[in-house]
Image 1: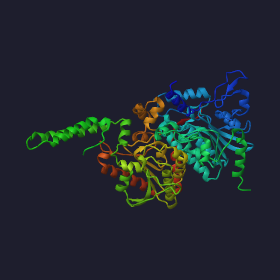
Image 2 (image 1 turned 180 degrees about the vertical axis):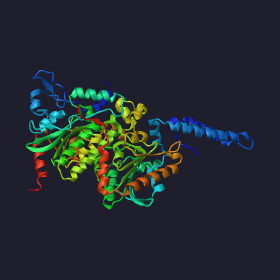
Image 3 (image 1 turned 135 degrees about the vertical axis):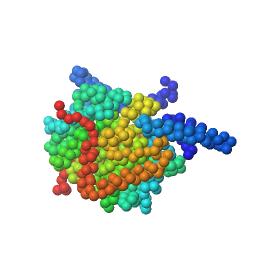
Image 4 (image 1 turned 60 degrees about the vertical axis):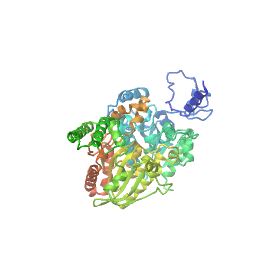
Length: 290
Length: 321
């Protein structure tokens, strides 16, 4: 490899494109997997019992929405709402991979109807409205259906005066639905504003990656914002920023830790401590000081 | 009028105009036939321009919306408003020239005005960061939204930005949060909010001041979730296919009315707003004052809940089975 290519390869490595969790469903039990971060070989069962956190280096692996909720709420407490609500292809978007086909493929690959799961649950016996986004489903981008499910979660939390906990992941607005997607930012932000005005607690957990129009709407309007270690969180994609400023990006740019240092999130919380932390936070916000 | 900037699709018109200029330089007294030829050519040019502009593609409209001579927010403020009081600063960090904020009078109404502010020349553009706001711009806008809310002033908001500026410090100072807070604040403003798309409506940076009780679009303005170039880059790794992406994104004024997002279109003269700004100013003045009149008697609670309902109806999805 010529030295210039080596530099390019090094450059390229700085953009970690988050992949969905490796599909290991068809592998026999007891296989070994390699941690993406520290390259250590880990027993798969250890990863599972450790909430997909590498026992070696503590790297947080990506989670499906279903696993995210399972790890966060009391066992068996989750009851989905609006589960039949799904996307259509309102613009007949065909540039690149046709949207209708992409939706079909995403449904097939994930077994989900849309990129977000919402419902009622309890967290250490505290009732909550909960939601989690799934990056495998078209990058958990927000189109009409995701925007509608999120908005309804805010409205359910409001009418039942039950705290809302959202685990966010998203590449941003879903461009295949054009302006209908952009307007979901205004819609979800308006719903968040109503919940805030009604003094019902809203906790957001920003996971890898939380970008674009989702960061710039409901995700950052929470009363308390937690982030997962090393999650990429930002508005503009790193490639665009680099092209715009024409110099290298600082180390850790748009990482959860960098956001913490710049005052943009309340804390970076290890996944294994999250449930307790959310429960404790809810107790404070719902206590009225008593 | 001599134009310095010619868009690719206008080249046939530009060539005829060039011919016309050279004819006009000839000595008319020596060649009496020339006068008739000039008139004929002028007619031909007008006809060709009208034909071109009667069927612009989405991508061509995007180019018109970005035309350097197109009237900017500052031009609208000077033409439509009187007694303008510009307000500066976000009270947190700085003042952003890419976002105009102030108090002004239109007709007989006193309002707050917001607007993305592109420069009219290179010097202005550098001062105004080519109309792409930093977080300070959105925070200034939000401050004035709250001012409007507290004192019951309607907001008139002018959209003309390629998007929020994607810089390192912008990310560090919370560009996303600055936009999100604008959205949440605008949702609750207890006074009419009238938005006018005068040029570019680039994504979240436009939306931050870009929704309300009425959305009026200039004929060649666009308002999109993503720029056609960026969309083409993501889909095809080729910004050169922006024309195809622009068509798919359905982000022209006509598209937005059809999708139920925009309410009204202000027509532009053939050749775009910059060829006859006065006509366009008049059209915008009329549309804005009409919208303000219609909204003036709606009680504040009703305005806010209607604004929410309007958003609640935006989106297409299936449910059931």
